[in-house]
Length: 72
Image (cartoon, rainbow, N blue to C red; front, side, top):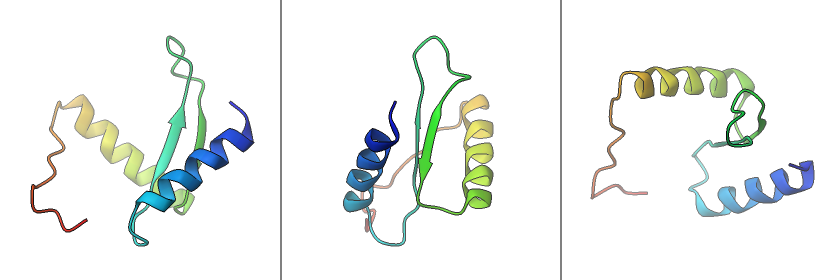
């Protein structure tokens, strides 16, 4: 995945989110998830913490529910 393609994806995601939201995009070839490209609008330390917490929830099979009345 090229840097240009990753930057374009990030610009598209950023345009869809409220200004106070962080995001990351991980792109990897199916069947080889240990090798990935990464882009984010957040501080690296914050993204690492978020990714770890998300991985923990996924391993525990916890759902990520979004309320119907979400203001975003």
